[in-house]
Image (cartoon, rainbow, N blue to C red; front, side, top):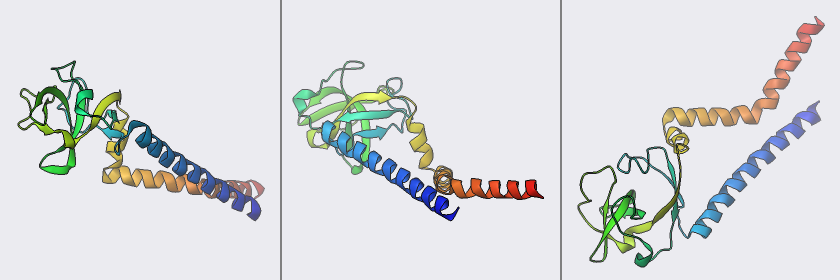
Length: 178
């Protein structure tokens, strides 16, 4: 019985390792294929409604030069992802509606006016090439304290499921034998 428990624990660890390695491999593969350090992002704001909604995951093609970005009002201009000029750790997803000296004029589809400052070309991460609706809500939830607790709890349950179920079976058998 002890050998069986040990084998189940090893299987669980192997499954978790395969999932982790596969996830890392997938992200690294996307980075290479899409030529972008940030190939996937979750939409956090309502500025691009109805084209992009909060909770959508966007796929971003990087490695572009300015000539590969189409500028035009919605719905024809490319949606680009760029670093906020004042805060390089903040990313904005807006449509390129016009060219400006050394960059692009951008606007959120849901915003009444274009963004105040043109986006320099070197701030552009890439352009949105695909969207996966709603799936990003999972990642938004995981960023909350409750989401983190639920995620850790599910991993612990997965890791110790054989111990929990074996213990219940042992108790059931003891009660059945009495």
